[in-house]
Length: 430
Image 1 (cartoon, rainbow, N blue to C red):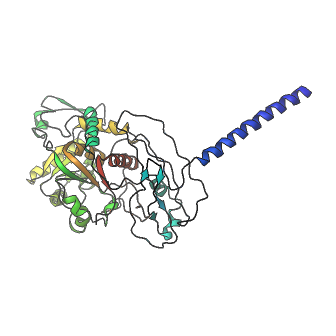
Image 2: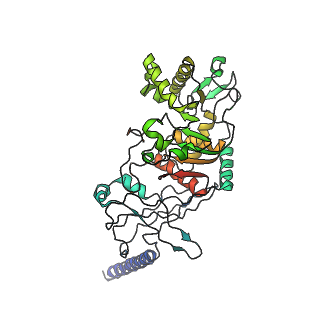
Image 3: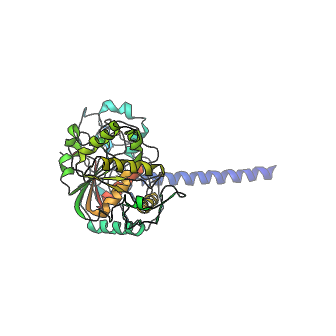
């Protein structure tokens, strides 16, 4: 019995010693953590930034609570390196009752001294605090640091990124008679077992060569997020040499001041033929489509008939209606030899979704034909930085599709912005 008690005493002492060491180490680590106004720098392959909870303390009051510990990501990649030094400074300031505008910039870090220069924080209306306190989407938005301001185009970084795209996704973005001639076979990019034989009738639907070869100095690419409402970005968008838009989003009337009107390329999902135009089952539906398309002038319509088999006949129907009404607009079909590799490219960089969105495909294609790409209307949340509600689209509040992961895509836009490759505009243009 005595020997057993001695053995137990030794075990207890060892356990106490280990607990003491762990506790001491924890205190040391907490002392070395960042303060609430600092953020861990993003590495290119980080999927999520460390969570920094909004502070409820008044300006000037010393913080006593500890911030959330950063989540480390040890993954590495051979792609372009990125270090972002922006700091999410979203907090609730009870001393300012109803601020409607705030600077969307981040604190600058002097790497020589590692000192942080504090900048004015984005202030949330106190009346919104309770409503937003437990909202998961609001919390997720705060985990995303604000992008660097002011933005400067980095030609070297842009050219290097284009080389990466060329290595993985070098095919023409659109189908032509040259890359898919008669008697060839088209492989659907989202259905591995589906193929289409290119007959003479099918080939007549394709242009002889890629019509998107020209390089433009500055392009505007316009999404449809509610963040565009009240932005006043219409003039800035229209000032570009080439304007790309997504999924027949309206530009006329009340929307023109925020989204502009010039359009050179606009996308249309095959599902829209079913949902909006009822597969053109009567003349009324055809005329509705023709009327909608007239808003965009002499544009090209981009569709994806060779991702899923159901989209082939639907895309053909659109092309046939355009021909029937002798429209000036031209149809171009996305090349599955481009969209397939692009989808894989972004998955490998952290976009965890079944399939990339139309916006992601179009932005990648824009980098092929544009020196500078400026994005507007890409925002994945239903709140702005001030906590104000946003509709899903600037023109309606329809539900989001299940196949895409817009926050993950937004993360990639942020990284490219901070590298100087693209310009991501999420604020006001006035």
